[in-house]
Amino acid sequence: MNRFLAFVCGLFLAAVSAFAASGWGDYVVACGDEDLYIVDAAGSAGQTPEVIWHWNVFEAYGQVPDQVRSWIRVLDDCKPVAGGKQLLLTSSAGGTMLLDIPTRKCLFYAHTPMAHSADMLPGGRIAVANSTNPKGNSLEIYNVGESDVCIWKDSLYSGHGAVWSEKYSRLFALGYKELRMYSLKDWESDRPSLVLEKVWELPGAGGHELSRAGEDRLVVTNHGGVYLFDIPSGTFKPMPGMKGRKNVKSLNYDAASGRMVYTVAETSWWTNHIYFKGFPKSFGASVSRGSSVASRGGDRALAFDPAFRLYKVRVLGAGWDPAVLTEADAWADAPSMPSVRCEGSNLRIFDDNIWQYDSKNIPKAWVPLGVDPRDSVRSIGFAKLVKDYAPDIVTLQEYSSHMDIYLAPKLRALGFTNAIEKGESWNFTPIYYDSTAVELLKVNYNLYKPQTFSNANTKSFTSAVFRHKGNGKVFALINTHLWWKRDNAQPGSMMAKASQVRLMMAEAEMLKAEFDCPVFMAGDMNCEENTVPIRQLLEEGYVPCYKAATVFADTQNGHHLCSAAGYSAKSNRLSPTRSEGAIDHFFIYNSGAAAGGAASPTEVLVYYCITSPYTLALTDHYPNYVDIKL
Image (cartoon, rainbow, N blue to C red; front, side, top):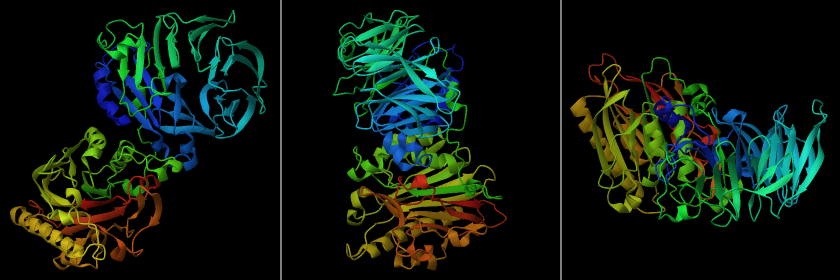
């Protein structure tokens, strides 16, 4: 399933800007598990959702306490508020969050046990309905400006719905067997409350969905059916076209057009389908008559990857403009100052070993942490790094074909091209480059052999030669991942690494002879400076970039726990110093070369190790980069 970050939408918006305002149901929000998707339903081909925006709970890392992310890891509602610019999220895991769509920022959070529904109230307040839990079964009120501070509470068994009516100035709340109506009391004071005015018994147990159906009616579902509740008369009537439909988890109804968008539990409590009913034939592409999906109801269905446990769908409303998605920087939290290019530099190279974890399962040790380390989620973080630090070239290690499914589209959306897509086997050490900044002149891929010292063909180097488009200067780059074991674990390992380094050095000499340019060498080399493999480089004139840097030299060693056992900021290295503890290295060689007609030698200005907290759960290596003056 394709998962794009908000900045992907820029490509999409150019295509849709010429169209008229959207109709009701053209854009929908789908939520379940830890993911949110905004889908262009009208523009989706066949049953495949056209995802134009995606958010994962992981993105709240650093914005909210870690425990808060564990509260919202099972999303069960995603209600658009503030004209479709914000989403009110509730989670069965015990949380409520107000998410701003343009900035992707958490504006409010609260611990709300078994939360199932929420809505905005006047005066910047939020009502939350909590379902069955020893600390739930309640209706609660919060101020948006005071996260996790409940200011009023009432009991409500199996709370599943909260809807504010502007016309009647009343809050409607749905429980297991009843629908309630509350009015506001002392709302302008610092001790506001709700007054229960009326209670209606449901036409059957198991109240589940509560949503607006125009100004005078509400949609209500329970275990056995779907109903329209008429507010003036206080009566329930079966929903036209939905008679006998059971286990409807969410239903959105437009009274003016008769359109419906809904989800039905099809595998236990979840589904992977969104159903559309009452839409014209011109709406997207119809489901084929022989489709089993079509036979279950609706004029059309969209089908997500079955691995996504979809729970609810919400409609963004007529006139909703996808330009909302790009009103603000997708990653508005500005990174620390070193992300700004060093004055005088004209090239930035970014390097990172991204930890190969191809499993479709969250490790047991990560579950209580509320963090998802699967590639679909971590790829968001890696794209954030590239977005934040804006390099010209990206070198990666442990880059599997599985991660490529998720990360490659994000890197392409940021303007990066893989210098070599495939070799005789998958390239675990790719070099990505921004073609607006540099021109690729030559590329080579070398898989280390024998496989005894290249587990599953993951150890290799990729070399590339580039011409800088700004000044025409030429430089070469070698990205590598050396064998990982030590001699005490597998005899001969250190000399195997030394042999792999000699292969890179031979490659560098050939590039030096052909282009007479500076050569950079980066990657996870799995050994320290005082070992034979690295001493070979030092003795041949390769200079560590942290020693060559003339403006800023970071000496952090860049390795920490991040595995199936969990993650930590605690260093794994033998020594706290970079010279004795680091296994990630960045070298410059032949810096005084003509570099394609350069009058002065190449200069490393900055070597920087990125230790932002959100990188901890991405990989066991801290990313690093160099700012260079060619």
